[in-house]
Image (cartoon, rainbow, N blue to C red):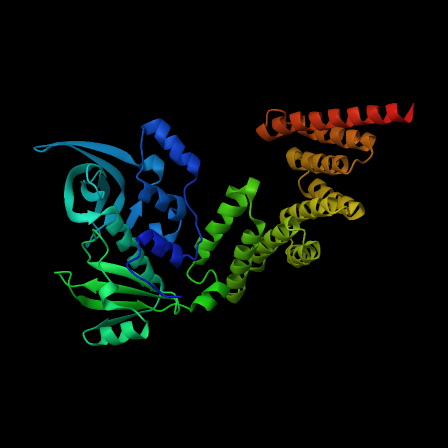
Length: 423
């Protein structure tokens, strides 16, 4: 371990979030390129890919989603200036400005656009040397100071503090392009950021901000120490739903367990917790940790059964029917399907879609288990009977086609079985 000196803001963000990301999907950059011809600079693209939906992008400076980025072409005495409008910033007094990048500059200098009462850009001006890198440094330092305890040192105290952290004053240099004259440094041994603020000449450290964080080993054990509950929910949704086809269920499980820990510490509503318990069960199911999954599902079921909420209970029975079918506990699966069906027929007999879905799911589970094709066909017919009561509903219309395919497959399997049996 050592002190990392004068690190780039994107590296600092990586350390701050312990490698967690929640940002813009690659397809959105492709779409922006096709529709607007935008070549988003690499540093901005990396920020949006990793941190667009985290608190880092929700402060006084906010970068746009790719579909909100626009080009502004200005005619000046020196020739054409091409500004890429990338976000907004709030200055002192809460006046909002547009933030842009001057694409004609080597270091991607920042320009600010004034906004009129109708939220239109009316005037662009330079920022006196602030670069995109420098602006992201400001974003990082602002988020860091807001989220953690910090200590300010000056004068003779600075050398003593640097010595304590094993840091060399001569190696701390201002971040390139930042008019804030700051540098971001990180003590890996103590897990602390050292933010050095220089005087106007840039030759001396005027202030040293030490943001105390957990030690490296503690942060390894508590991966989400700097992530808020809202961010945890966003991270889970991005992994579990947004990345559904390639979900890292182990990672999703870690996030969900942290969410539950925080909710339980704040005495959250039991029904809210039951939803999270079910998600833990689903992750464990996907990881083939079936006994643990069953325990979490039971924990959720106990709350839901006592709530008197029939719709939640019906959905829970459906979830458990799928779980038991997938784990080859067919009697239990059938029991859960029947329980769900009974609830729906009793409470919402006119909801043909949900009732049809019970028959369809039951038919699918039986077919997946190579069960009796006649029974699969029978269940498909019952599902179709429900869906065809409202054939213009988009959901019913879609499911009619799916169930017809499933029924056709069962008929072909029945024919093949008869052929092989010699009948």
